[in-house]
Length: 325
Ligand code: MTE
Image 1 (cartoon, rainbow, N blue to C red):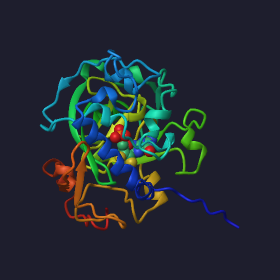
Image 2 (cartoon, protein in one colour):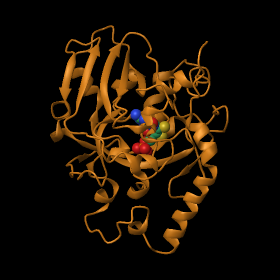
Image 3 (cartoon, rainbow, N blue to C red):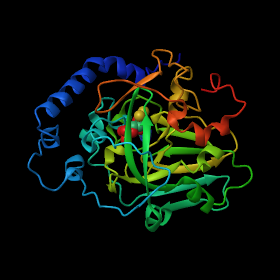
Image 4 (cartoon, rainbow, N blue to C red):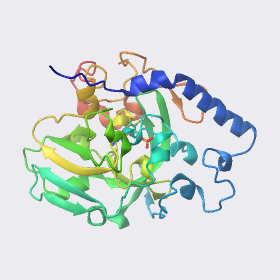
């Protein structure tokens, strides 16, 4: 007899969190109203003058990164740093929004390498320092829209994924790109439970992966990525729901067939392969028409392709986006 494994979903977590979330927002509002600012929130490190980076990652000093501004940046005000580093989804460290910041500080991110495989002329392991040219770093301020109907604006630091892939010399059979997160239950306590089928996997079609908006990020807000945000290397695809932006990547394969992805495998009706932000396609359990920007009370209208339609819609011309959600 087959054993049934109960899979937690972002949605299931959301339902459980409804109270938690409203408490969260009222707590933020209280702190703002009290004029107490960031120093009092969460960490208990008030008075520490080493800056917010030290608060967000007690296990690791986050180095500053030089990056040139990008013309592809959004003009919006970035989300508060403390919010962006304390309200996270990173199920390898637990399903509560505070878990990643609480339990990820011991993750060892140096040394780090990424293994390339599949349809490439140059397979094999590449150390992070050789993979990302630090003199070419760009700052990309992007809106990111989570499937759970919240959004944020983050100044990411990274490089276009296209250049990294081209350096591995994809063959003509490379039609998709498959990404994999580190699998190490000792360092990632969430992996000791079958929340998802580990390791976390994501995928893109090759034209999406090569699109100039798609980046591999190693930093945010002028510094290296905190562990809870996917250190030392994550994907950022701003026109897709946040779960496509896979964290702590250790493997990238170029492949001929559409690869399996964690959420699509767990709940195919709820999470499609494409996962383009689409206010007209509801999640089976809630609408995607509106979103709440972290730090705001009022809800905003969700835009098709998260507002990046002008740049990306042509990649999906002729496709039924309800079917290929
Ligand atoms: N990557 C891994 N490996 N594991 C995860 O649980 N969560 C995803 C994505 N990448 C996730 C992941 C989801 S659901 C979202 S919304 C974003 O990361 C959240 O990124 P943030 O915590 O930096 O805001």
